[in-house]
Image 1 (cartoon, rainbow, N blue to C red):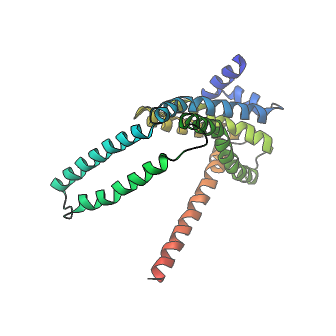
Image 2: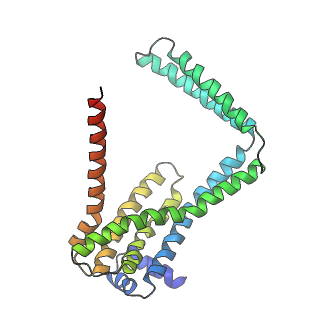
Image 3: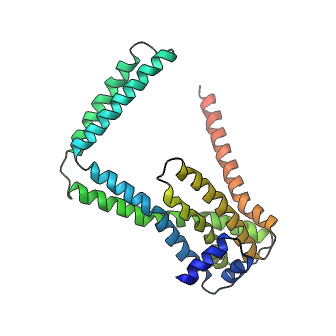
Length: 248
Protein backbone atom coordinates (compact mmCIF):
# COMPACT_ATOMS: atom_id res chain seq x y z
CA UNK A 1 0.00 0.00 0.00
CA UNK A 2 2.86 2.39 0.81
CA UNK A 3 4.37 1.74 -2.63
CA UNK A 4 1.01 2.40 -4.28
CA UNK A 5 0.60 5.70 -2.43
CA UNK A 6 4.12 6.78 -3.41
CA UNK A 7 3.36 5.92 -7.03
CA UNK A 8 0.09 7.90 -6.91
CA UNK A 9 1.98 10.89 -5.53
CA UNK A 10 4.54 10.71 -8.35
CA UNK A 11 1.79 10.50 -10.97
CA UNK A 12 0.01 13.54 -9.52
CA UNK A 13 3.31 15.44 -9.69
CA UNK A 14 3.80 14.34 -13.35
CA UNK A 15 7.09 12.52 -12.71
CA UNK A 16 7.98 11.00 -16.07
CA UNK A 17 9.72 7.94 -14.61
CA UNK A 18 6.55 6.92 -12.76
CA UNK A 19 4.54 6.95 -15.98
CA UNK A 20 7.15 4.88 -17.85
CA UNK A 21 7.43 2.36 -15.01
CA UNK A 22 3.66 1.97 -14.90
CA UNK A 23 3.13 1.66 -18.67
CA UNK A 24 5.80 -1.05 -19.03
CA UNK A 25 4.53 -3.28 -16.20
CA UNK A 26 2.98 -6.65 -17.02
CA UNK A 27 0.11 -5.91 -14.62
CA UNK A 28 -0.48 -2.34 -15.83
CA UNK A 29 -4.21 -2.93 -16.32
CA UNK A 30 -4.67 -4.55 -12.91
CA UNK A 31 -2.80 -1.74 -11.18
CA UNK A 32 -4.71 0.96 -13.04
CA UNK A 33 -8.08 -0.62 -12.25
CA UNK A 34 -7.13 -1.04 -8.59
CA UNK A 35 -6.32 2.65 -8.28
CA UNK A 36 -9.47 3.70 -10.13
CA UNK A 37 -11.73 1.60 -7.88
CA UNK A 38 -9.99 2.73 -4.68
CA UNK A 39 -10.13 6.42 -5.63
CA UNK A 40 -13.80 6.19 -6.61
CA UNK A 41 -14.76 4.54 -3.31
CA UNK A 42 -12.74 7.01 -1.24
CA UNK A 43 -14.20 9.95 -3.19
CA UNK A 44 -17.74 8.73 -2.56
CA UNK A 45 -17.33 7.91 1.13
CA UNK A 46 -18.36 11.32 2.51
CA UNK A 47 -21.36 11.51 0.18
CA UNK A 48 -22.39 8.07 1.41
CA UNK A 49 -22.33 9.24 5.03
CA UNK A 50 -24.19 12.48 4.25
CA UNK A 51 -26.87 10.68 2.24
CA UNK A 52 -27.29 8.03 4.93
CA UNK A 53 -27.71 10.64 7.65
CA UNK A 54 -30.25 12.59 5.58
CA UNK A 55 -32.24 9.50 4.59
CA UNK A 56 -32.29 8.08 8.11
CA UNK A 57 -33.27 11.47 9.54
CA UNK A 58 -36.17 11.59 7.10
CA UNK A 59 -37.09 7.91 7.38
CA UNK A 60 -40.42 8.81 9.01
CA UNK A 61 -43.17 10.09 6.75
CA UNK A 62 -44.01 12.84 9.25
CA UNK A 63 -40.47 14.24 9.11
CA UNK A 64 -40.61 14.29 5.32
CA UNK A 65 -44.01 15.97 5.44
CA UNK A 66 -42.71 18.74 7.71
CA UNK A 67 -39.70 19.35 5.47
CA UNK A 68 -41.86 19.53 2.34
CA UNK A 69 -44.31 21.91 4.02
CA UNK A 70 -41.41 24.16 5.01
CA UNK A 71 -40.10 24.07 1.43
CA UNK A 72 -43.58 24.92 0.15
CA UNK A 73 -43.80 27.94 2.49
CA UNK A 74 -40.43 29.18 1.25
CA UNK A 75 -41.56 28.66 -2.34
CA UNK A 76 -44.71 30.70 -1.64
CA UNK A 77 -42.63 33.55 -0.20
CA UNK A 78 -40.44 33.46 -3.31
CA UNK A 79 -43.50 33.76 -5.54
CA UNK A 80 -44.74 36.71 -3.51
CA UNK A 81 -41.35 38.41 -3.92
CA UNK A 82 -41.43 37.80 -7.68
CA UNK A 83 -44.81 39.52 -7.89
CA UNK A 84 -43.24 42.74 -6.65
CA UNK A 85 -40.59 42.88 -9.37
CA UNK A 86 -42.01 40.94 -12.31
CA UNK A 87 -45.22 40.99 -14.27
CA UNK A 88 -46.63 37.78 -12.77
CA UNK A 89 -50.15 36.94 -14.04
CA UNK A 90 -52.98 37.28 -11.47
CA UNK A 91 -53.74 34.02 -9.70
CA UNK A 92 -50.37 32.50 -10.67
CA UNK A 93 -49.52 31.60 -7.06
CA UNK A 94 -52.95 30.02 -6.52
CA UNK A 95 -52.67 27.96 -9.72
CA UNK A 96 -49.21 26.67 -8.82
CA UNK A 97 -50.27 25.63 -5.32
CA UNK A 98 -53.39 23.98 -6.71
CA UNK A 99 -51.18 21.58 -8.67
CA UNK A 100 -48.39 21.14 -6.12
CA UNK A 101 -50.43 20.36 -3.00
CA UNK A 102 -52.41 17.40 -4.45
CA UNK A 103 -49.14 15.97 -5.80
CA UNK A 104 -47.62 16.17 -2.33
CA UNK A 105 -50.61 14.37 -0.81
CA UNK A 106 -50.32 11.55 -3.35
CA UNK A 107 -46.57 11.25 -2.71
CA UNK A 108 -47.06 10.94 1.05
CA UNK A 109 -49.82 8.37 0.63
CA UNK A 110 -47.43 6.29 -1.47
CA UNK A 111 -44.67 6.75 1.13
CA UNK A 112 -47.00 5.46 3.85
CA UNK A 113 -47.57 2.16 2.03
CA UNK A 114 -45.97 -0.88 3.76
CA UNK A 115 -42.60 -2.06 2.41
CA UNK A 116 -40.88 -5.49 2.59
CA UNK A 117 -38.05 -4.01 4.68
CA UNK A 118 -38.17 -1.36 7.41
CA UNK A 119 -37.53 2.06 5.84
CA UNK A 120 -34.20 2.66 7.68
CA UNK A 121 -32.87 -0.71 6.46
CA UNK A 122 -34.05 0.05 2.94
CA UNK A 123 -32.34 3.46 3.03
CA UNK A 124 -29.04 1.93 4.19
CA UNK A 125 -29.10 -0.82 1.55
CA UNK A 126 -30.07 1.62 -1.21
CA UNK A 127 -27.25 4.06 -0.41
CA UNK A 128 -24.75 1.25 0.06
CA UNK A 129 -25.71 -0.22 -3.30
CA UNK A 130 -25.22 3.13 -5.04
CA UNK A 131 -21.86 3.57 -3.29
CA UNK A 132 -20.54 0.13 -4.26
CA UNK A 133 -21.75 0.47 -7.85
CA UNK A 134 -20.06 3.85 -8.38
CA UNK A 135 -16.72 2.33 -9.52
CA UNK A 136 -18.51 0.29 -12.18
CA UNK A 137 -20.30 3.40 -13.45
CA UNK A 138 -16.95 5.18 -13.77
CA UNK A 139 -15.33 2.14 -15.40
CA UNK A 140 -18.06 1.78 -18.04
CA UNK A 141 -17.78 5.41 -19.13
CA UNK A 142 -13.98 5.32 -19.08
CA UNK A 143 -13.70 2.12 -21.16
CA UNK A 144 -16.24 3.36 -23.69
CA UNK A 145 -14.20 6.52 -24.31
CA UNK A 146 -10.80 4.78 -24.26
CA UNK A 147 -11.82 2.50 -27.15
CA UNK A 148 -12.23 5.52 -29.40
CA UNK A 149 -9.06 7.15 -28.06
CA UNK A 150 -7.15 3.94 -28.79
CA UNK A 151 -8.43 3.93 -32.37
CA UNK A 152 -7.30 7.52 -32.97
CA UNK A 153 -3.96 6.82 -31.25
CA UNK A 154 -3.33 3.87 -33.58
CA UNK A 155 -4.04 6.08 -36.60
CA UNK A 156 -1.47 8.54 -35.24
CA UNK A 157 1.20 5.85 -34.91
CA UNK A 158 0.64 4.78 -31.31
CA UNK A 159 2.24 1.52 -30.14
CA UNK A 160 0.33 0.78 -26.95
CA UNK A 161 -1.76 -2.37 -26.56
CA UNK A 162 -5.31 -2.11 -25.28
CA UNK A 163 -4.14 -3.27 -21.82
CA UNK A 164 -1.43 -0.61 -21.73
CA UNK A 165 -3.85 2.08 -22.89
CA UNK A 166 -6.49 1.13 -20.34
CA UNK A 167 -3.99 0.75 -17.49
CA UNK A 168 -2.25 4.03 -18.29
CA UNK A 169 -5.32 6.19 -18.82
CA UNK A 170 -6.91 4.84 -15.61
CA UNK A 171 -4.49 7.12 -13.77
CA UNK A 172 -6.73 10.06 -14.70
CA UNK A 173 -8.90 9.09 -11.73
CA UNK A 174 -6.27 9.93 -9.10
CA UNK A 175 -7.08 13.68 -8.76
CA UNK A 176 -10.74 12.77 -8.33
CA UNK A 177 -9.99 11.83 -4.74
CA UNK A 178 -10.81 15.54 -4.25
CA UNK A 179 -14.42 14.63 -5.04
CA UNK A 180 -14.68 13.43 -1.45
CA UNK A 181 -15.53 17.06 -0.63
CA UNK A 182 -18.28 17.29 -3.27
CA UNK A 183 -21.03 17.62 -0.59
CA UNK A 184 -19.40 20.86 0.64
CA UNK A 185 -21.10 23.90 -0.91
CA UNK A 186 -18.96 25.95 -3.33
CA UNK A 187 -15.72 24.22 -2.31
CA UNK A 188 -16.92 20.87 -3.66
CA UNK A 189 -17.70 22.28 -7.09
CA UNK A 190 -14.39 24.16 -7.28
CA UNK A 191 -12.37 21.10 -6.30
CA UNK A 192 -14.36 19.02 -8.78
CA UNK A 193 -13.30 21.38 -11.57
CA UNK A 194 -9.67 21.22 -10.42
CA UNK A 195 -9.83 17.41 -10.35
CA UNK A 196 -11.30 17.28 -13.86
CA UNK A 197 -8.62 19.50 -15.40
CA UNK A 198 -5.86 17.72 -13.47
CA UNK A 199 -7.26 14.34 -14.53
CA UNK A 200 -7.33 15.32 -18.21
CA UNK A 201 -3.68 16.44 -18.01
CA UNK A 202 -2.71 13.08 -16.46
CA UNK A 203 -4.75 11.26 -19.12
CA UNK A 204 -2.87 13.04 -21.91
CA UNK A 205 0.52 12.44 -20.27
CA UNK A 206 -0.17 8.75 -19.63
CA UNK A 207 -1.45 8.20 -23.17
CA UNK A 208 1.65 9.82 -24.65
CA UNK A 209 4.00 7.66 -22.56
CA UNK A 210 2.12 4.42 -23.26
CA UNK A 211 2.07 5.06 -27.03
CA UNK A 212 5.60 6.51 -27.19
CA UNK A 213 4.52 9.58 -29.11
CA UNK A 214 4.38 13.33 -28.50
CA UNK A 215 2.07 15.24 -26.19
CA UNK A 216 0.55 16.95 -29.24
CA UNK A 217 -0.53 13.61 -30.72
CA UNK A 218 -1.83 12.57 -27.33
CA UNK A 219 -3.95 15.72 -27.09
CA UNK A 220 -5.36 15.04 -30.55
CA UNK A 221 -6.16 11.41 -29.68
CA UNK A 222 -7.84 12.52 -26.45
CA UNK A 223 -9.89 15.38 -27.88
CA UNK A 224 -11.00 14.05 -31.28
CA UNK A 225 -13.52 11.47 -29.92
CA UNK A 226 -15.18 14.21 -27.84
CA UNK A 227 -15.34 16.51 -30.88
CA UNK A 228 -16.87 13.75 -33.00
CA UNK A 229 -19.45 13.04 -30.30
CA UNK A 230 -20.28 16.77 -30.03
CA UNK A 231 -20.70 17.05 -33.81
CA UNK A 232 -22.97 13.99 -33.92
CA UNK A 233 -25.09 15.35 -31.07
CA UNK A 234 -25.29 18.73 -32.80
CA UNK A 235 -26.35 17.11 -36.08
CA UNK A 236 -28.95 15.06 -34.23
CA UNK A 237 -30.41 18.14 -32.55
CA UNK A 238 -30.36 20.03 -35.85
CA UNK A 239 -32.19 17.16 -37.56
CA UNK A 240 -34.84 17.12 -34.83
CA UNK A 241 -35.24 20.91 -35.12
CA UNK A 242 -35.61 20.76 -38.91
CA UNK A 243 -38.14 17.94 -38.72
CA UNK A 244 -40.17 19.81 -36.08
CA UNK A 245 -40.19 22.96 -38.25
CA UNK A 246 -41.25 20.97 -41.32
CA UNK A 247 -44.16 19.45 -39.40
CA UNK A 248 -45.44 22.86 -38.27
